[in-house]
Image (cartoon, rainbow, N blue to C red; front, side):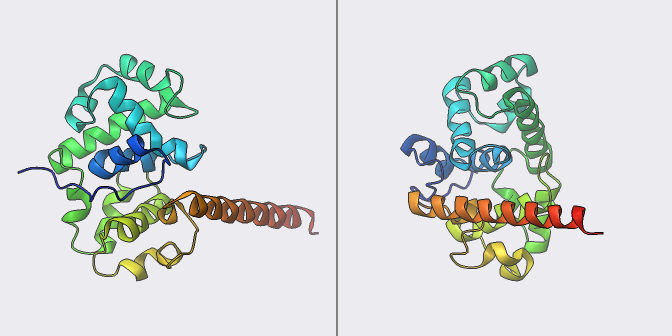
Length: 204
């Protein structure tokens, strides 16, 4: 059975036609993009899967999992690297590929297309290497907002990230303007958290 694909074009997070097409056509690419979205600009993180495809020749989870770790790390760290910590992320990508291969038969999309409800989807996502609770909720919001994947309980289980046009995360990035708004939200949230931490540290 062919792997389910996302509509084309749907994803415009990388702000690059080739990279966004890879994200739209390949569920594993989208999952890897989300994995890379930490301590790195969003659009560059989601451009990472296309770099891997161009250099490695495939994003098939089986092939990625079977790749020689040192060579795969070199490929990911070669400038322009897929991430600030390219070699470390290469290991996480291979670990992610192994889970997709072993638990979902190599069918990445099955993680969400076969989830009976959003609670189950979040449990599956948090069980993936590199996916904590917040990343799982953001990815579930991305699937719902941009790919139409909304299992029962989607809005209630995900919370604020599911709010329409909330511009809280990559789930709302569809063009340059929305990317700017998400950056502004994150910057404000970071400043607020820093201010709160400073207050707490100086309060007797």
